[in-house]
Image (cartoon, rainbow, N blue to C red; front, side, top):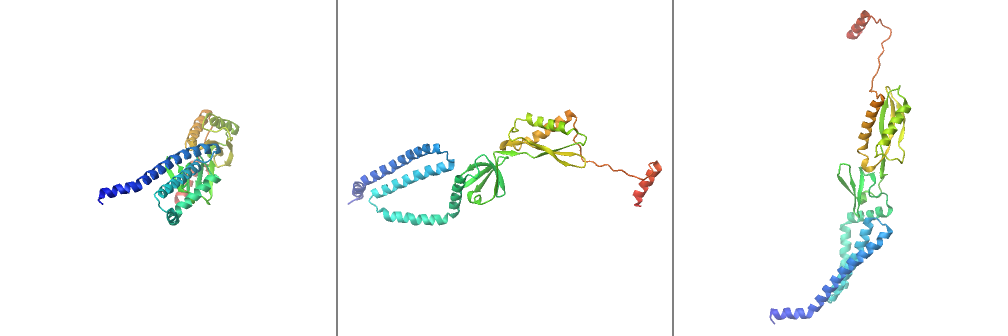
Length: 283
């Protein structure tokens, strides 16, 4: 029997099985896509986190595709029992080799279900801080105000202490005024400046109060609330507006200074000259 006859005999024997297996696999892909879309649409009413929705949809599609692949192999007359056992052994080996990835995956599920923070909130953890940009199954991305991105493995987050600021932050500004200033007028000016800035939130109400009686000034704390995205730019805007308004209202902002009074000496030129001589000679 020549090669051509062998090819024809092979096609006759396995051609129908190959076509049938291919049809089964293609149908499985179409079914997986259709079921995935249905599942995704059904999950929207539960308002789950995007990574969890993606995990469920991909899991359902993967199960259907694997089932279609097993049916395709079985259609060729192959005994799938050893194949399934082999897949189990391979799965164990892959699991041992990817312990770090699996740890991140499990930690990602914990973050998604417990929701200690959400996308758009500002957090500080493991020496890093930023606005939560994305919560993935393996990692969490933080964006900085300088447009850089920090990627943190999820296993580094679960079990750690972190600070969640939420979607707003409180500014901590400080100014100083002269001791002879009208403090009520100062407060009116400051609150007017805050009211004119559209980035300052009306709720919660901004904090205001005298914090310290310094050597040359009365120090005042100003603590308004802003959104996370306005946090870097607002302090400069407020300081400039406060300085300009104080100048218009003739409210003095003193610089550090000290008065030195010399007592018990002759204020005449001779006495002053004698004092200078003593300072020069060290007497």
